[in-house]
Image (tube, helix red, strand yellow):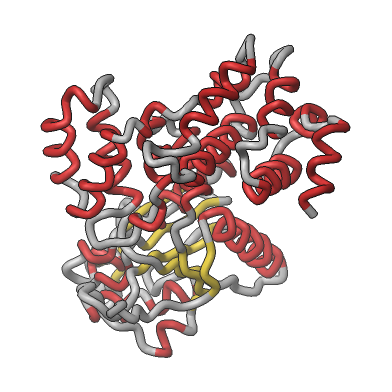
Length: 376
């Protein structure tokens, strides 16, 4: 029976979450010009999805300042407010003393734009959580306030299930705008490709995306595992070690699937470079036809889908540089009868939507246009 998590807001992938953040941040900045306060954001999601990484990446991409705290590490209100200091203007006068606070060192002091991240906010003690309410409401505490153009983002694990979290009441929830991060294999693969994650691992996730939803198998734990096997060139020849490394971070179902993935030689799927750089496309066509069926003759659409996804990632990568024969080879790939029409159309539409002008030019072909029209 599936666990009913309590989550809030629009459910979306990492790209959609960043679009939501962009709009909210822009609106907050517009409001601040009229001396109105903005609104904090809370990103919900199960563990290991990359909620923290999304916020870090956003700040990095925008070249914004970034400050990080984990409220669960706070043991007393002084960790949030800072330490009090008694000021005595005149030692000869009794009763003129007053108290000021020295803000903690993580408190931003320079004008933004910037993001203050309250990571795993609902894992904090209830007293600390209540102490954050004024910060979320007004972007300040009695002891300090955020400089102009700073945004507040919190991350949280869903209530329900086995998560050790502090429930938020309505007074807390209504101080923030909410959204929930969900895993998307293609979006993750796009990130993994740019982050130089082992391409065999990327192929595995694209082939078995349904496995990335358990307590131990998460995008984070998979990335850790792929980092460990990156230096092992021959996975099949080192299967015992590979299995031990997999079991150290993944659940048993995922481990058995990865071992089958290696034994089935799916790690040897044709690389995008091999397709685009082919001098004789007939040999590539034969290879694709061979791997499109298994030993029993059953169609392996999963293999073809993974190849199409990896080709898309290559062509839309920031590091991709078109070469002389790439256009012809890409068109020949798209014309293959081996590729099911739904995969063909999906790849073509993704390239038109996310590819640059050069990619769109590469796919302009009369035979390809005719084939695409026949699939409608």
